[in-house]
Amino acid sequence: MHTETSTRILLTGGQGKTSSRIAQLLIRQGYLIRSAGRSVSKMDGARADHVLFDWYDDDANHEMALQGISAIYLVAPTDMHPEEVMIPFIRRALDASIRRFVLLSSASISEHGPVFGSVHQYLQEHAPEWAVLRPSYFMQNFTEGGHGHTLRQRGQIFTATGDGKVGFVDAEDIAEVGFHALTDKVPHNREHIITGPQSLSYAEAAALIHKLTGLNVKHLSITEDQLVQALTAAGIPAPYATFLAGLDHRIRVEGSEDQVTDTVLQVTGRKPRSLEDFIQNNKNWFKSA
Image (tube, rainbow, N blue to C red; front, side, top):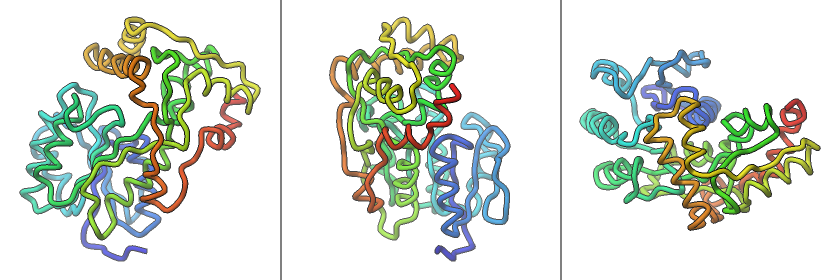
């Protein structure tokens, strides 16, 4: 149990899938945290405070977020060039003697890639202590994300991935790796490609949901243009929607997400949750769909 009470760990990303889970892990282990996001935090108590935070807000907002902070979890805004706001913020944190940074990126995006790549590179070159989390696609997308909505409304999962496979990973496992990257005495100073224990196509995932829950769900393979249209209709900016559709293209054509790593085991000491276990543990959600 951690007993330090003088500094907090800053978690950007507000109530996001990983930030919220990392927050709970930190609190349970005795750490003080500060969540930062555009909506009011659902957490309260002596160990958690919250600051309204927008990557595009004025400098005073960022300065307040950084007061009394020892480490930062970085979740990028939905932007093709998040480095334009994130790198100045990281510089300010470095000037404030904050040493440790953990960035949420993607298994599909290396330090030389778009969107997260420039921030990844900057941390690698300038931060004394750093880690970059590069998870595969979240299992929670089937229950909390866009797939959850279409699955519940239509019994369908739409992607442009074709028969391409993905190493679906539980957000709880990502959060545990993030927890260690933020708190381990020895800094990780590396990237972590984080996957579940097997890679599956979306059709195979849909078949598994049907097998375990009885829910009649199908994967519908659509074109990249159709995916862009669906994403923009859901409010995602067109350039970012095109970027996301391009990731589906790479899954289908290049097998970019068809991989399994032992990162969760190596960092946390336990095996990652399988998609089968995730579906079993969320059976009530699927049965109510």
